[in-house]
Length: 94
Image 1 (spheres, rainbow, N blue to C red):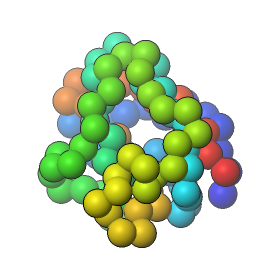
Image 2 (tube, rainbow, N blue to C red):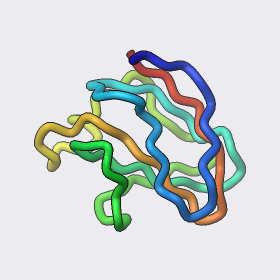
Image 3 (tube, one colour):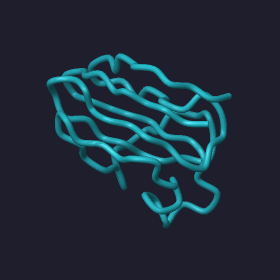
């Protein structure tokens, strides 16, 4: 299901930023704290930060394939954010 929205990431909580299986995504950290992004193959929240990518405020990706961000995860189709102090992320995907 496509979405174009801003998602609030609560402090110290993995939050899914995709609402369906996707192949590409645009996102930007629009909050004031850094965030970690992690790819998965299911709607089950990650339990650690291993393999996560860090994005500081203002950073993000434009129409990037998840497989390009996380080439070590076969079938990656979901994205999650984590921020120790909470943040907001603008996200768009088809």
